[in-house]
Image (cartoon, rainbow, N blue to C red; front, side, top):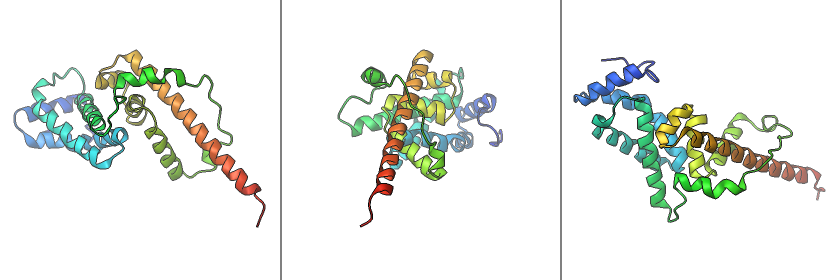
Length: 214
């Protein structure tokens, strides 16, 4: 049985664990679970914005992965295959919570095309000069949650979880150009939203400082 240490990204070890799990070795599958459950949870939480839903997604994704191990052909990383299952489960959670149809990955691109900024202004001063790292993480997390789900999902997989463009495309069932396009739009939207946020905060601070004392 392969050790679990330093196995992330090791396709050979992944495949060995999967093959063992196919033969009924639950210990091997539990190692896969321990290896990836937190990463899958982060992805699910970033999509659903709900911790309990994210936990459900993790459980359902691993359960479906276990039931369908025979369908994993080994042409890609097991983790990429698992991410695709988890993303589908997370999107299903959103669809159950929302009555509109804007949760579709494809629809987001069409509805957001006309709203992208042509030029993005620089922050002045830089946010790091005015906010702690904890505050910046909270601000960034909330801003990411405001992105359309199609852009947000691509951004989380590429820029947060550090999947390659090809792995992200495979996990989401998209073409590489589509991933690149959505990632660019996600980054631009994120930058625009952050610019507006910091500009608004700066204006409030200026007004507070300049207000006459009672």
